[in-house]
Length: 185
Image (cartoon, rainbow, N blue to C red; front, side, top):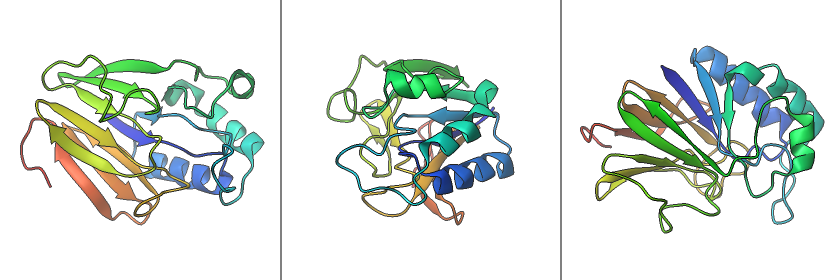
């Protein structure tokens, strides 16, 4: 199973298209959205090619391949535009013996952990900063923002065969971590 993780698109049709092109190129099985898909939010500048209606139309073509959680900028109005659910504050995935706790990051994050067990994986966005680390006996991951990064460059995450890699759209590796606890970099 190969998964692509994106967060904080904030209505950028430009970066949504780049993300979906990477999804296809990487031959991912599912696209995981960590929230803030359509609206840019009052604290953010408008991203490149701000076009929430276009972003919704692009995403709806992949509705059977998307797992999403609600970001702090996502609302019931956004849900009316999308043909897949986005209003859950968190969800769990069980893959390769790992439990992934997926959330946006405005409630649960590295400094406010949800209830997790040994070797669980917390994945969130919201902060627009890439992160891949093992903290105690859990893994904490943030692929950053595809459209409005606050540190580094626009990036996304790929999970395959126990490895979570944060990459740029130019295929540069920002960070990578083995969720079996081996070969962290």
